[in-house]
Amino acid sequence: MKKIVLIAFLTFAITAKSQEIKSLTLKDAITYALENKADAKKAKLEVENSEYQIQEVRSRALPQISANGGLTYNPVLQTTVIDGANFGQPGTTIQANFGQKWSSVAGVSLTQTLFDQSVFTGLKAAKSTREFYQINEQLTEEQVIERVANNYYQVYVQRQKLNVLDSTFVNTNKVKNIIKGQFDNGLAKKIDLDRILVKISNINTQRQQVLNAVQLQENALKFYIGMPIETKIVIPQSQFEITPVAFSEVPNTANRTEYLLLKKQEQLLEFQKKANEAAYYPTLSLTAGYNYIGQGPEMPWGGKPEDGVYWSDFSAIGLNLKVPIFTGFGTRAKVRQADVQLRSVKEDINDTKLGLDLAYENAKIQIDNSVITISNQKENAQLAQDVLNNTRNNYIQGLASLTDLLDAENALTEAQNNYTSAILDYKLAEIQLIKSKGELKTLINN
Image 1 (cartoon, helix red, strand yellow):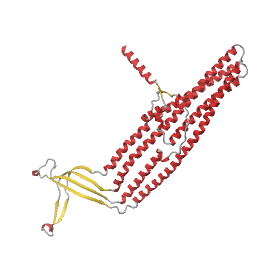
Image 2 (cartoon, helix red, strand yellow):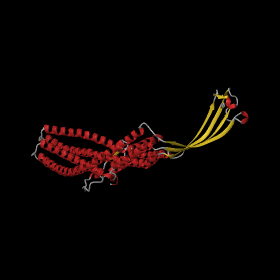
Image 3 (tube, rainbow, N blue to C red):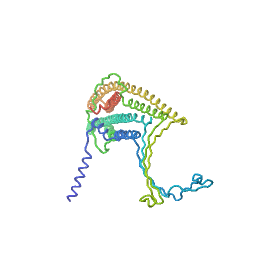
C-alpha cells in the first residue's frame, strides 16, 4: 500500500512539474534557443570540426612514417638463362634459379615533403578556414535570434486577439442579461434576444479558432527555441512597450555578418586558386627506409643459418623530384574554374551590399509608418470604446437599436485588433532595423 501511494505521489509530482508554467521573456527565449536549438549546436560543431580540418592540412607538412612487413612463398622459382661465357664456358647456356622458396621483409619507411606549393598554400588557408566557420556560427546565431523574435511577437498578437474576444464576450454577455431582463418584462422582442445569443455563439466560435491559433503559434515558438512542446509558457505584457527610435547614420555594411562571411569566402577561393596554380610548380620530397629481410628454403620466422635461413638488413635514402611539363591543360582548366568562382562571389558581395542597404532603408520607412499607424489605431480604439459606451447607454434608455449596439461592439473589436496588428508591424520592423545595423545580439542584453 505504501509503495502504491509513493508511486502515485511521484507520478503527481512529475505531472505537476511538466505542467509548470514558464514565464518567457524575449531574452529568455533567445538564450534558450542559442543553447538548445539544433541549428546553433550544429554551427558550434562546425567550428570544432574546422580545427580537425586544419590539423589534416598541417599533417601534409609533417613526416609520414609507416611500418611494413610481408611474408612470401615461391612454390616455383623463376629460371634465368645465362650465357656460359660469363663463367668461362663459351658456347654453352646455363640455367639457374635465383632466389629462395621463402622470404620475409619487415621495415620502416619515412617520407618528408621538402617543397610542395599546394601544402604551403593550404597552411596559409588554415587560419581563414577557422575564421570562416566562426563567422558562419555568428551568422547562424543571428538567424536564430531573428526567427525567434519574429515568432515571439506573433504569439503576442494571437494572445492579444484572444484577450479582445474575451473582453467582447464579457461585454456581450452583459448586454444579453439586459435584453433577457427586458424580454422577461415584455420590454424587448424575442428576435433581439435571439440575435444577441447568435452573437455570443459566434464569439465563442471565433475564440476557439483564435485559441487554436495561439496554441499553434506557441508550439512553433517552442520548436524554434528547442523547447519541449508540452512546456506551458506565458509572455509578459511589458515586453511590448513601444519606444522611440533614433535613426543615426547609415550603418557600415562591411561590419555585417553576411558581408564578412562572403569576404572570407572570397579569401578562401583565392587560396583555392593559388592551390590549383601550385600544380605548375615542381615538388621535392625526402624518402628513407630501413628493412630487415630473411630468406631460405624454409619459413624464415625462427629459422637459423644451419637451416639455410639467413637474415640481413638494408636501407636507402633518396630525394624525389617531380617537375610538371604537360598535363593536357588540366591545371589551366582548374585555375580558370577557380577564377570564375572568385568572380562569382565578388558579384554576390556587391549584390549583398545593395540588399543590406535596402533592408535598412525599408526598415526605417516601416518604423515611421508603424509609429503613425499605432498612434492612429490607439486613438481609434479609444474612440470606438467611447462610441460603444454611449450606444450601450442609449440602448438601455431606448434611444438606440440593437443593431447600433452590435455594430459598435464590432467596431471596437476591429479597432482593438488593428491596434494589436500595428504593434506587431512595429516590432517586426524594429527587428529588421536592429538586424540591418548588425545588432541582433543586443536583444539578449535588453
